[in-house]
Image (cartoon, rainbow, N blue to C red; front, side, top):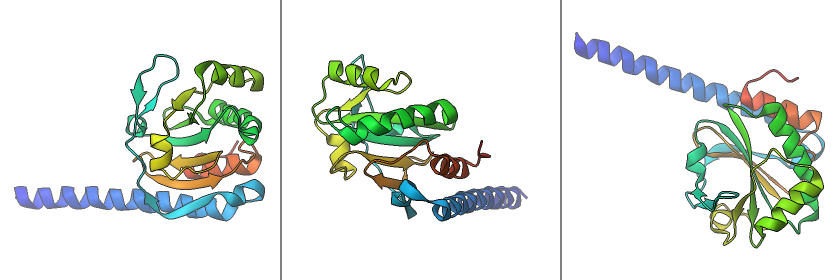
Length: 192
């Protein structure tokens, strides 16, 4: 009897995982069909890809973190630099996304790649009017290089299991209605 109950529980859990994975894949496929304008550059992967376990520096205290610390929620990970003109243009868009979508299931994570002084990063954020995004750094580009970040900006969407599910090279209007609808679809939310 215990074996039968165990088999039924295992089957139910497996079925639930399959249904959840199938629903997530359906949301990604629906989002792929929605891409317009800048969002046409968003490449949604057929199969989730591994990310990196390399550490990066947290904004003010010099502590370190990894992407594994963010598992359990979707992460929109933006690699940028203070000298990057397109980064200056799109950073306020990420700030708007964080205000609108940020919470228990989604976070915008910004990481300055390469040589960017903490003072320069603070100045950059003040100049573009952003006060709700992290000012993390990857000064030796360990995370950036392991994730194939060559050129800036590059933005990566990571699923709650810590896998890359989409990538956009270059800048985009991330606060556009189309970008927000795509994110809402992936997150399983109603677009506002």
